[in-house]
Length: 348
Image 1 (cartoon, rainbow, N blue to C red):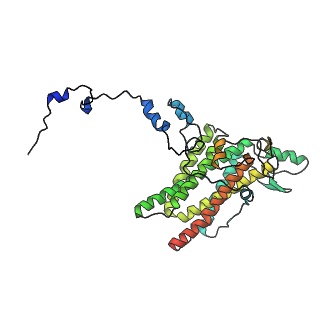
Image 2 (image 1 turned 90 degrees about the vertical axis):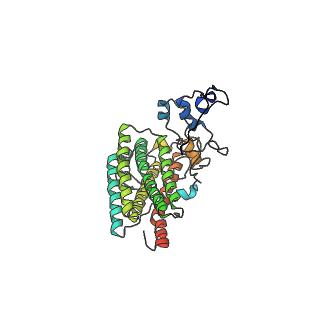
Image 3 (image 1 turned 45 degrees about the horizontal axis):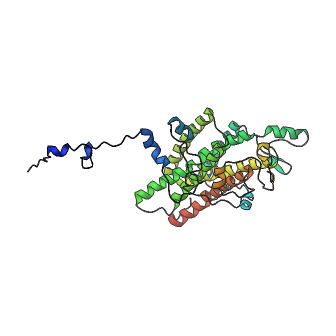
């Protein structure tokens, strides 16, 4: 039996009063800009404290769209950092895990080839022993002047750091994303590894944001990062589907090389080869004593790493970033070995 809905004509002539049908009520005019900016201007939480950091919308994109720019360091942290003990960070010593299997040798060979190309393109000379300090080629007397001219400048170091950090944040995202999908397919929890991997990727991105506040890359640098990121992400994605163990070894050797890179930069700072970062302003110098340098690092980096008074120079920042790489170097080499051995009965 068919029914027809009969609506009296007088019910459709109520105008825009409070009892008028919904279709006849006229909503107040709303601009497109107010709809876009509403999510940005809303209060995140009543417990959100100022000075915390997340990734706000790009200032350039906000300006092009006519939106209010959100200052860096005003949104809440997704994974707050507890900070590092300065004495522990100063005692980090680069180490190396010799490859043992064919997949280990393949992973190590790939990273060494990438390291060679990175050194070649960035103009980094090879290291040699000079007295008690390991730095660029050179010596004493007349060669000491050549030593300072052969090293990389502060801008060259920042370019190298930016390129390194733009790739270092990919492995954690790839592994965490694939483990997330695997957990969904198996209808089972992942025992906390997804969060750990994504937190590692987030930490690497914080390194990148810190260096981007000190140096603005040009078109060539952005293009190189764009191409390298696409190739690295897809290669890791396919490799992780085939052999997670190989990817863990690959990332472990990548973290190992990053520790060597930051250690070399710290040695050159201690040797006085980077005066823009080591000239003291107030208390302490950038020497071996670990004092704060005169170069001012971004304020949000101070809050993210909970850097104490007198420990807010460029040398202190590099120490904290280096110990982060050192921690994840052991994480990818040993934590995953224990994890797979304990839960699956095999090494990784």
